[in-house]
Structure formats: C-alpha cells, structure tokens
Amino acid sequence: MLIARALLDELIAHAREDAPNECCGVVAVEPGPPVRAARVHRALNAAASPLRFEVDGRELLHTIDAIERDGLELGAIYHSHTRTAAYPSQTDINFAANWPEVEWIIVGLAGEETPQLRSFLIDGGSVEEVTIQETAI
Image 1: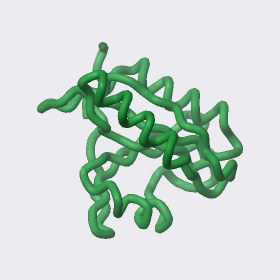
Image 2: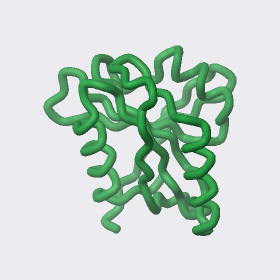
Image 3: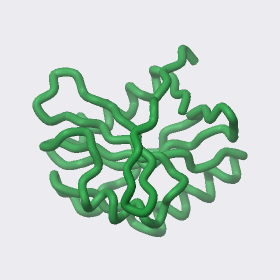
Image 4: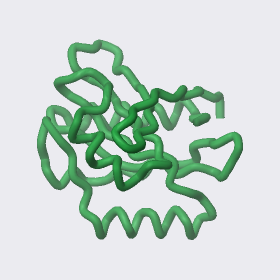
C-alpha cells in the first residue's frame, strides 16, 4: 500500500491519543494497482481495553458504506498494540478470518520512542508482512 506521511502521522496520533487503550479504525484506498491510501477513518474501540479492540458492527458498516459512496475501497483495518510488538496476536488472526483481502496495519507503541508501523495480510491463519510504502502525497 502506498500511504502519505500525513496519513501515517494520523494513525500514530490516534494510537497515542487512545493510549493506554488500543485504538482502531480503517483506511480507505483508491482502487489500484497501485493501491494508494486516500483517507483514515477513526473508529471507537468499544472494548476500551489496552489488550484488544472491538469495533461496533453498525459503525463499521456505516463507514464502509461512506467509503464506497466516495468511490473508494476498504484497504486496511488498523489498530495499536500498546504493550506488545507490532505483530498480529492470535486474537487479531482470529478476527482477520472475516477479512482475508484486507491489510492489517498495527501501530506498535510498546517501549518505543518512535512508534513502529507494520502491515500484514492474514488469510486462514497465515500471516504475511507487506510493505507500507510512504509517499509524499
């Protein structure tokens, strides 16, 4: 995924603002290739937990409808890890079973002065890291 620095900064800001709880949201993309991030949509972590995130299903459907009305697609689901590395937990892997084509961006804050951003494709329990390519715009 190609993503502008401003959008990466927005993900990091959201993670920091919601700490010590995990943050969550989605990234809308322009259809590709190449897949280019267009917008970040913050969501409320209904679990309000430092160990997991939960997005209200109605909120998520409303957001996806808005993304599609704008001619965009759901490209990634993001969340933060405030106590662990920026790598999918078993809970993340289980949740991703419903979204095999979507990237999973994790903002790692644990013990990091500079947050770590990593993205993954998760399909059938298989985890593959994919590159986040920063763009100027």
